[in-house]
Length: 232
Ligand code: C5P
Image 1 (tube, rainbow, N blue to C red):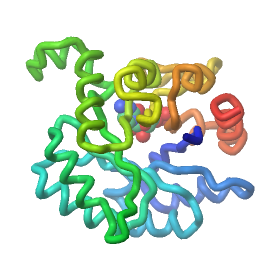
Image 2 (image 1 turned 120 degrees about the vertical axis):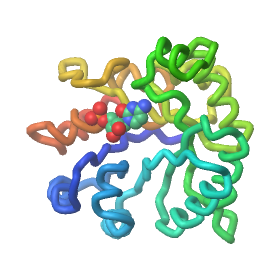
Image 3 (image 1 turned 135 degrees about the vertical axis):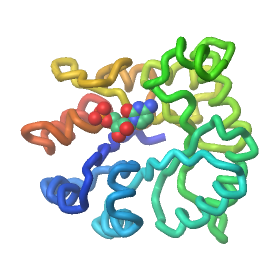
C-alpha cells in the first residue's frame, strides 16, 4: 500500500480553497474535503477539485439508519471521490449497506473507511456519557474489527492507535491518521499528536495534515516536508 499525505482543506469557501490549491504548481496533492467546505459549497466543489486532477477524500462521516446511508452513498459515488467515510458506531449492518450503496455497476468503488471513536472523545466521557463499559483502546479495536467484518478498507484513527489496529486487523487494513504535527511546530487544539516520521514508523498508511500546511508561511514547502518525512 502506497503511503501518502492528505491535506485537510478546512476552508469555508471555494475561493479560499482555490487560492490555496493554486500555490501547488508542480504537484497535485491528495486533498480532504470535510463538512465545512462541503456544506458551504455543495457537490460542485468536489467536481471542481476533481477536475483539477486531485485525488479526494470526502470526509462527511455518515451515521444514520442503513437504508438512508446506503442511498446517500449511492449519491456520493457519482461524485467519483477516491475515499469516503462513516461512523463505525452505526453498526456492521450500516457499514455493509454503505458499501452496497457505494459500489458502482462495474464493481469498482471509492475506498471506504470508518471513524472508530473520535480523537476528541476521552475515555472518561465515553464511559460516563455514552455508557460504553470498556477501555477506549478496546472500543477502538472492536470498532475496527467490525469495520473489517463489514468489508471496509480501514479506519480513521490517531497515529498512536495505528499499531494496535494493524495488530488486530492485519497490515493490509488501512489506517488514515490525523493529529500530525512537525516536531518543531504548534500543536493547536489537537491532543494526541505525533510527527510524520513517527506516524510512518507506527504504520499509518495516510496522514491527514491540516493547519501545519494550510497555515504555514510556505504551504508548498510544508507539504514537501511532510512528504519527505512520511513517504521518504
Ligand atoms: O489542522 P489539523 O492538522 O489538526 O487537521 C486535522 C484534520 O483531520 C481536520 O480536518 C479534522 O477535522 C480531521 N480529524 C481529526 N481527528 C479525527 C477525525 C478527523 O483531526 N479523529
